[in-house]
Length: 113
Image (cartoon, rainbow, N blue to C red; front, side, top):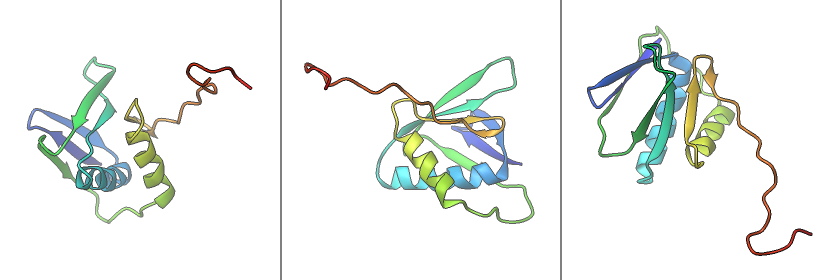
């Protein structure tokens, strides 16, 4: 079990495997100068915490496991995609929130075919 510390104000326990993947996503997003919203489960009577991840916010990731988790490229790609979405990246107690399927969008100002 690892820990994500946000701005020295909040700490979140996250599975080492998920945290290792999140670390890659954060590095890539910040390298591109792209902030994103991260939703995390909280156990203190709060359903969920939303954190704005940006280069101006201090973020510490601590790993307590004995070995380096294997990286799943497909999971990193999914997390990158979710982090770039309007809703941001949502982590659950079980890992990554499943992608929501939305109905097909109609063109703005036009007629559907």
